[in-house]
Length: 119
Image 1 (cartoon, rainbow, N blue to C red):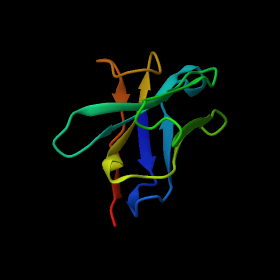
Image 2 (cartoon, rainbow, N blue to C red):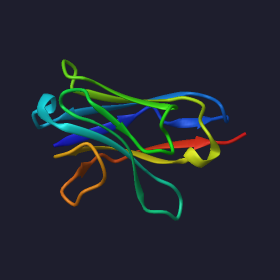
Image 3 (cartoon, rainbow, N blue to C red):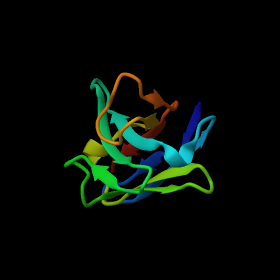
């Protein structure tokens, strides 16, 4: 299993970013995919998940601002982040899981991409 995130960067508050995660080594179309983040000095926080049937789930902290999507033809999952806030600053990780909500011991994660929101 390989998960490779991209798209992070330094942006100002109120800006948008689109993260991508290229997946390989497993049956992507039948897998739940996750995004989680880890802010400095804090634990891993589940952000969003998408089921194999495209049903989506979001943490309350990002609901209405972030959108998760997937392209099964390209084995890629995306996280569109709008109206970014300084508290969204974190390393963002893409994950593969049995279920799209929460963080489980058996989840598999990529190497992460840094998102920094600062003026």
